[in-house]
Image 1 (cartoon, rainbow, N blue to C red):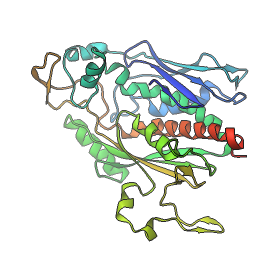
Image 2 (image 1 turned 45 degrees about the horizontal axis):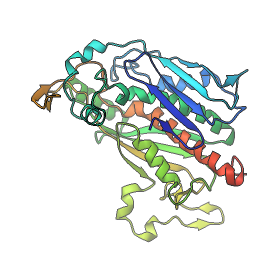
Image 3 (image 1 turned 30 degrees about the vertical axis):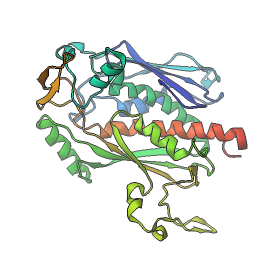
Image 4 (image 1 turned 90 degrees about the vertical axis):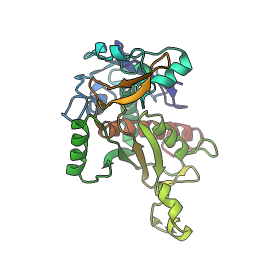
Length: 333
């Protein structure tokens, strides 16, 4: 399951400490203006090493378009995107070859495949999200002519909601050899009504699946989300007038179909599992060990997840629009 999407299909490849990470897109409409400069800003927002509160790994993350674009426009053929790994320090992980890191996919990957790439988690590393961002930036470019935009932001870090307090929480966790989680909010604006395919292809189900496929995300809610369980029906329902909906408690999706309002999604992002604080674990022989994870890691993943989530949302929406084109024409016409 390294391929995402039904119509706009993205297959990602590469490992954290391999030669490169990338994506192959199949199903991109032809004639879309596209250059590396359209993709690079999203990769720049995601890349590590931009501040003392992020991983110290120094990667330029420069994207190369290898195929599928001719004279500045997509051809309809597969688009291959490549980003080479430069600042690889695999020796940082030598001590982890036979030890399972708590909170990581080390144990489950070993249980499934019988072996694993211990260098930064290999395929289960957060670096895999780089490929999603590259592909999602192409989806963003496809949506732009229709006035559809996706914007994300961090709204909470370890219960702090003001920017200064969020930064203080991240700094304190870093200095203590620990980490913190946060909440990211996504808003997709300009989506036409009618996107989504009941009953098993609902738009909100597709969004939730896309967001939960991001390794650090442990919860997803649309609109009121879990807060809906504490409301009355008269409070939760969105009244409709001649001018349209009067509120948006549903988060832009009803019955699995877009309403035309903003689609509002919030993600619960767990604390980074790689921490210096000593933790109990076992090795591959089942013997108990104590571990302290060294290396270069983010004390809070939430800020760098924002462009990842934006790009996953863009791919879901574009995929739904291409599906809708089979019924009503691309763009809802």
